[in-house]
Image (cartoon, rainbow, N blue to C red):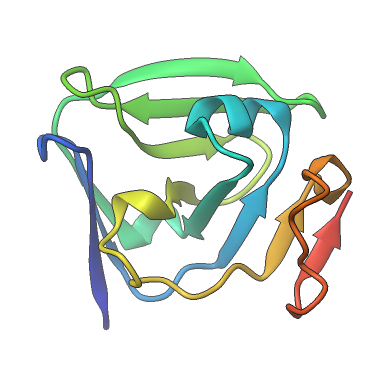
Length: 131
């Protein structure tokens, strides 16, 4: 099975995944845009038993727009989020940017699509749209 390694900027917090993600999605919610400093977040969700975590992390907990509790785990040295968990969904999500470039497939889902900036055009891609 294929293994991928996700790491923070300083390399002290890591997640090693085995196999393919359950889903790859982008999210346009305000919290994801704030966390990433970008127009959307790009995340891959893996089964919890397909991930090995190492290194010291700190966590930040918030309540999502629909009431779910999300716990972000980030490096206390460089501040990069390496994974997060949502109490209302299976698995562990990892921001795609902490993997090696080009290591994951294109997103299949666009979450909070009704909040995306007008200049983002996903019409040419075969994605599920969640508003």
